[in-house]
Structures are given as C-alpha cells and as structure tokens.
Image 1 (cartoon, one colour):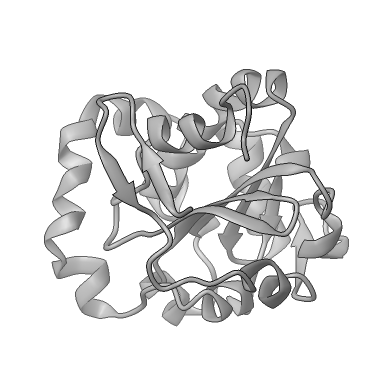
Image 2: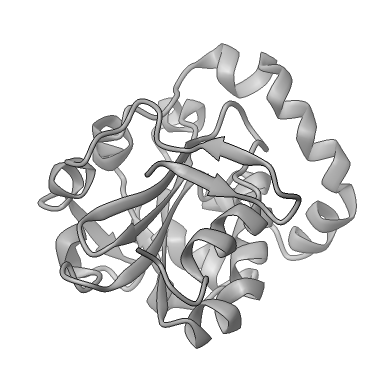
Length: 209
C-alpha cells in the first residue's frame, strides 16, 4: 500500500507523511460550493466505496490554478467514465471561485472554496514566501508554457483573494476510495502539480484494492 505505478513503470511511494486518518481529519471541515452553500468534505463523496480526486489548488487568482483547473476539466470525461468524482478546492471566497468558473470556464458543481485555508492547514500543505517564489520546483511551469497560455486567455487578477497572505499557500492532490487514502502529493512550489498520469492511473484502473 502507498505505491503508485506510473505509465513509465516507475514505482513511487505516494503516502509519505500521511496516515489512514486523512479522510477523518478533513471530513468535518466546512468549505463552500462555488454557488455559496456551506458543505463538509465528508458529504462530497460516498465515504464507503466512492472514488474521489480531491485537488487543492492555490488561490483562485493564481495563473497556475487556472492551468491546473483547465487540465482537470479535460480529465472529467475519463473520471466520469470510471465513476470518480472530481473535487477541486481553491483558496478564496465563493465569489472568487465563480470568477474562475465563469471565465475559464470550469464546471461549478466540481468547484469549492476554502477561504480560511482550513483544509490546507489540516493537510499540512506547504506555505510561505520561499515556497511561492523561490522553490526550484516552481520552474516546472515553464515546461508547460503552451498549456498555461491557453488556460489564461480569459484570466483576470480580480479572482485573487482579498487576504494577501493567502497567495503564499501551496496546494496538493489526493485520491480517496471511501475513507481510504490511495494517493497524496503536496505541491513543492508554485506551478508544481501532481502528474495527471499518476492520478488517473491510481483512480481509473479497472480494479482498485
């Protein structure tokens, strides 16, 4: 348990730093639908056998959040066909989430807002000036320049949270089957995202033990 076999055949330990209680930890946390209604994580997917990809973006005004949201949107048909629910969470208020949803565009029923960053704190995701601007992993975004440029065609800085400290928060990617954590990855820096092939490989296999 805790390994991911990528398409290239590489085996990686994906659960270092996490335990079997991750779903319990985030379950009671309140977040908001993009439409404004409050909801708890535990109500977003079937806690018995349901499969869910929980993608924690950076703040809604980050161009890298727009790029990741665009990539995730393109994966929805694959996830839907495998019965996997996509839950994309960003830092900011629901009105900021709606800006991204309307302008990217991105399906509003898959988008949630965590203005207080409570889920990010609970998952101990990286935060700070050095992670945001100076981490070597942030340079990965330049290898995806075409994808980034396409994603931000309708970008607006008005999606940025009013709380300026929120822009220093990094995200992460998690895959759950019911309460079981199958995959976890913290973003090392701005623009450093989980490889989508890893995520799809772990959640869209014919059988997930």
